[in-house]
Length: 390
Image 1 (cartoon, helix red, strand yellow):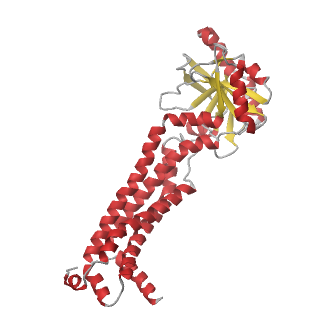
Image 2 (tube, helix red, strand yellow; image 1 turned 90 degrees about the horizontal axis):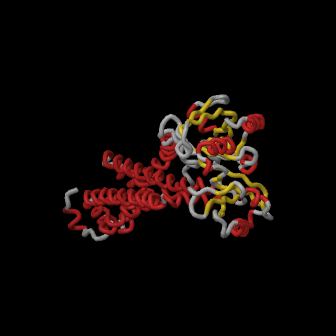
Image 3 (cartoon, one colour; image 1 turned 90 degrees about the vertical axis):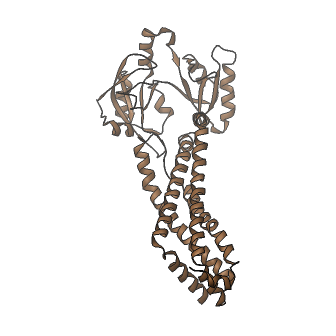
């Protein structure tokens, strides 16, 4: 036990013999661990948003060609009559601009009577929902959106149409909250009937069209069967459909930036490799400076294993301290990043798996950086080592 206590004492003293070098190395590891954690969190958040906000019993039906092609409104009643269907609603992407292009937020024209029965994860005061349903020129917005732009009940929100030209003004009649942390509260909902009425006047050919149908089914386990049933109903029609689970629908958008996400993930691991090389160089310098000390320990009868553990212990101590500081700093930095990006992620948090990967990265850096110096220490000749100038 005495020799191990002596080992720990030496490790503690050795790592602070060059305070500036040790401090800078720890800071480098800290920055690398923070970068790794933040990049991993960004990648995870793209997928987590789709996973967390998806209901197993909810299907999305769109045009089989592309989302940009609409579906007839008459499909709603046909879908509603299918066995196994619980509730049907629909919506259109509006795509308006509030003040300028920088103020982006999702805007959907929805069926006011059914949409919030399907999406029951939105918490809306009954009085506000009723006011919205009675006023076709009104809208309901999420709490995050209301807080960002300081919207209040009764305020008017002017939007410049892109898909649907003109200036559209909507009165805020309700603000919805999230029933769980995974619900996106940065959206705006207006009346599909109001949109359709104006479209019928300015673009008659696009009237009575729906972007997507949202279907709640009675038995979530039959999602594949119900998807096939819906699509077979409209096979060989002028507007064939593609039906899939909400999760699959949302992940299809993630797939559009899949290459970018892979690049971000690759950068996260490259950062660790770079700091591993820096740490290895630091430990190599340290070992060269202490050649005579290691030779002296050998002369006193300390085995090669003791010297190897001395080098490994110092490397691990530096790496773990830097890694711990990095893990602690990841949480406030991730939160600041989330706020700075305008909360564009529906879900953004540092997952436990990311923290464990950070711990593993710190341990790996410490071990790999010590391998070459530790192995070299076993090859030191006592006579040559004592002649070396530390």
